[in-house]
Length: 591
Image 1 (cartoon, one colour):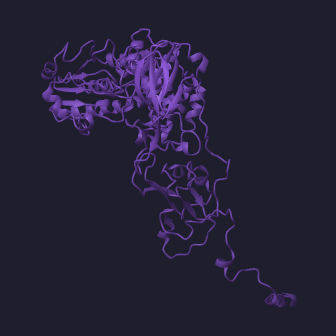
Image 2 (cartoon, rainbow, N blue to C red):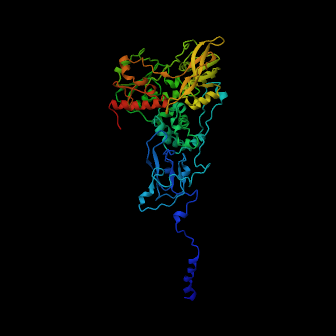
């Protein structure tokens, strides 16, 4: 060993008098960079609990745990981080559709208990919860496609010429591209009244497996050809993708599956019926509620007979929705498969006129009725009994029966729901100029937003905050509708404003036809009075339990008469629940 080797270690002492490269107090003097990927933060109010962060994490460092009450559009779950597994890659932040998840720039956390490093950001108290520094998904940087695939449709000019279906449907390439946008969070399932397994049938589209897709759809919805066109699609209003762009076209994807398979193939794909169990169930009304109950009861082996007053089955699906929205052949497709299972249809059978209710009641083990709301409300103004005043439902039913309505060249529709929009757009197809009067604001209109948009696009004039006052005979036209302007008056927190007539604001519209479409009531005159008095509760609805059993033994009810949601998918769900209830009541239920 040389002398140099011996002396060399002592040479470092000269560094004692130089400025050190280390920090004596690193916690105080070494903050993370402004976009450093440190500990996670989460805005609990913005988070919807979709679980996309858990799904994308490559290290299984995230678990979704219950934190809040479940509500529409929010699972109530929130991500719980495990910092024994997390690698701080920030994929969870980049994928988050609501943008609630981020990372602070804090990175120092010292504790002797390893369990504390599993925590719920935003819920557990941490010093960085309100930190605005750190990593957030950059504006314009998206791992998810925010825009939906446009639906091919007839032009407004073309659609007004006939009742040909406006929505043309997705091609295979379009459907798969739209299906690829789904993050399979399942929040839509909880919101759907029928709890359809949406992520599963969308996955079937991605896999190009229409057979499996049809099986999944029919588990909870036996009217997919119809519902895939006119469903109120509450699922889309809570879709996680809506938080970063447009919701998945769930309704149109359901339609795509059904459109790919011929009716003749259904029997080879779907479940067969159980052997006949010797029990009979009567169903009154062949709308979505009655058809749904019939389908699921027949699968369970019951002999099912449907009684309906109309010439053809379908209820409001056929007689209350124009063919440009729901073609009759698609209604038939749904009905024909149900009939092929052995369900008996008795059309033109008016209960209380052609068939006695007590006779049906006595000859069946259970009765389910879903007769809808067929009695239109009047405007309760002078002159509404004049010739030229016709309800929206009557107009739509006449068109379905092949009659050309005598509406003249100018029409005023009163109302803001889907029936009002359908009546207005039908009138346009017969060449009339159409004005729609609605007493509240456009934001309050119960019609689907697309219906309002399309009605306006087809040339219907929409006048809001307009209250009808009276109808008189016209001179140059058949009628004169007098109306006044309304101001919206607050009724307090949590309540929608109330329209109040502005004195002296009266105006008049000359027209040939006035079409009231402000809602309908149930017509239960087919029931014996002693039974009807026991069934109807507050606000005119039939009282039912969770299985849609009424207070009268072996009578069940569903659809609009028992459900304030008043849409097809809710009626379908009611029919399914009633089928379960009847099966329990008759002793055949197996969990």
